[in-house]
Length: 350
Ligand code: 13P
Ligand code: SF4
Image 1 (cartoon, rainbow, N blue to C red):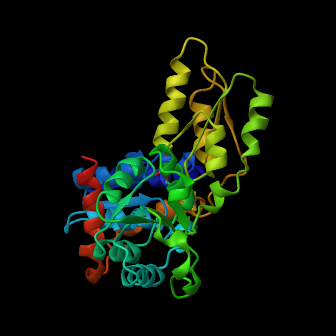
Image 2: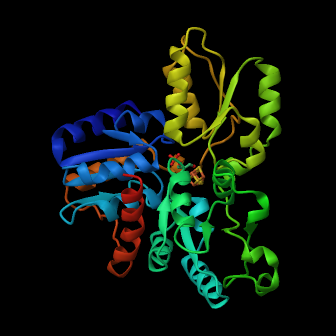
């Protein structure tokens, strides 16, 4: 480990300003210590156009690297240290199935605007772009859902039904205005076509984050019993039942800011945080002695984020130095419609 750290430090020194290492908050501490930029999905996407380095080494799951590659300039290359680090939620919305569903909804007379969580493949984003839709992140889902609802006669939110339902609640959209669609292998389940639910304002794709979705709502009650007076907040990929029991919910950056805010209060409460364990443990370490941070689910580890190790980072930087690194390739046929979804998000959210 020590040798790897030294090697990475030496590579970074030699590469100087030619390389910028970006990392998501769910990366482990060792990787984060080498990141020039860390952030939630929205912050990382926003920062890309301002980066001058010739090479971006992106430590996060595949869709995040793809978004960076889409937003990078033509002279820049984006590298993924562990190309098999994918997002399980992103895999739940295959582009062909989404296209068939949107086409069927159109044929049934619906003018539905697709709104995709940024946790989706480039191919899915391209489909969403073709149908006039946009992407959103957990940090701007409310703004983007409001925007999408103004575009047609309804919205198809995909792939995370939890984020969709949690955001709808914040906008005062009742359960009776929402419908989680049923799918078959090709697209919309034909049985859906006659269901009244399909006419509702907000249609939800039946996907979720397997790491956040399985945290039971009851964990909040147990945390409050264990730590009377505690504050509980969680990521909105958790179920609406869990989020309802919390004091707050938001993106990874929101959770970090909330922890800092509570640490600065005169009598900091115990802060129970419901999200990926790497971030919660890092916060606990950073704020030790100032605010006690406790995980809502100590086994909430994203196995894909964890695929990126120091060895991967070292090998990636070494390949960049030797000019043999293979950058993430954006299919030119998908680039324009996919970029349109990201541009719409960045424009609507300023
Ligand atoms: P954020 O956008 O809040 O960083 O979340 C990304 C993610 O993958 C959460 O599971
Ligand atoms: Fe995807 Fe869930 Fe991992 Fe986030 S925590 S990257 S949504 S699988």
